[in-house]
Structure formats: C-alpha cells, structure tokens
Length: 252
Image (cartoon, rainbow, N blue to C red):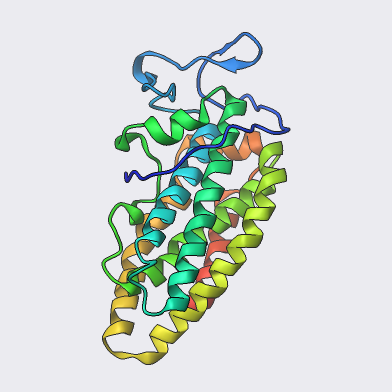
C-alpha cells in the first residue's frame, strides 16, 4: 500500500479496551505485547495479523492518510482556484482524521507515531483504490464519492459501537465528512452532466474503484465478524445497505 508524509498524534483520551483489541497476549497494566511466530510484529510492534479492533483502526487511519495524499496531489492541478482550495481543505481533514485514529492505537498498547510513520508499505491496510495516484480530475472526483463515501460509512458504523474513543471522536470527523460529500456530489454532477470525454472518464473511474472498495469496506472474514460481536459495530449487511444509499444517490 502507499505511504506518505505526516506526523502522528499520541493523545489516547478517555476510553476502554475490548478483549478483541490488539491481537497479542496482554502484559502488565493492560498493555499489549506484540505476538510472535506467524503473527510476528514489525519494527513498530504491530503484529502481521493484528486483532480485529486494531486492524479496523489501521484500515480507517491508513485509508484516510493515503486519501489525504491523493487529494493533496490535486491542490495545484485542479480545474480552478476554488477546487484547489477545496482539495487542500479535504486533504488536511483526512490527515487530521488519520492522526486521531492512529492515536486510538495507544489505548491498545502501540506507539501511534511509529505505527503511522515507520511501518513498511506492505503492512498498510488502506483501500486498494488509493494504491496509485489519480490519473485525472475525473478519478479524483470519483474517489470523493466511492472511497471517501466508504470511509464515511465505516466511520458511522464505528461511532455507533461500544469503543469509547470512537464514540467521542468520530462524530466530529463525520461532520467534516459531510462537506466532502457535498463537494464530491456537486463535482460529480457537473462532470456527468457535461457529457463527453470527462463524463466517460468519470464513469470508468467510479466503476474501477467500486469492487475493491466494497471488498475493503466489507471484509468477508472471521476478524470482521469478531469486531461486530465484540465492539457492536454494524453488521456487514447494514454497512452495505448504508453505502448503497449514500453512493447510489450520486452514481444512480
């Protein structure tokens, strides 16, 4: 997965740790010791197979971090000064959200700064649609709907669970995500209504991003089922329905 610049926060805030949290045996004061063997940790202490909650946080934070980088690529290359300013604001939002999410890992016994900055690229859990830079503005716009929309739904689900840090911090992220939705929907409609090559590029980009983004949003594995059971987030069916409502309103 992709890498990028940034600094991680360390404020762990109020909250509690679920038994499903970090994927390693517990030691002293509720801290987590990285597992060994086939779950060997990297230099940052993150196991190769982190526990369900740790994986979920990493998935959200990594995707937000990389999405911020992809947005920032278009600050100077966007069609107008106004869209460039919006791209800059959205990039800053994504990086800020990523840092807040990484900081939650301190509650699970990890160093948020090391996790953000020092992991090898292959240990990232970001959405595959962000692996490469957006080739054109149409791909940027498609990502605001397909990928940013998936992030918003995943965050909404997380905020309704029983992990205290998510319940207290994610609602503010969702309020800022609403501006991303409004920008993206307006840009998408403008490009689609204009027709021609721009509309064709937009449709192709959105269709290309959807399958891998759905697989990222709805991982079909025991870890996600454990996360639902232990952290009381939405089940996959509800997440998928909410995503269809959000994205379908724009994609048609």
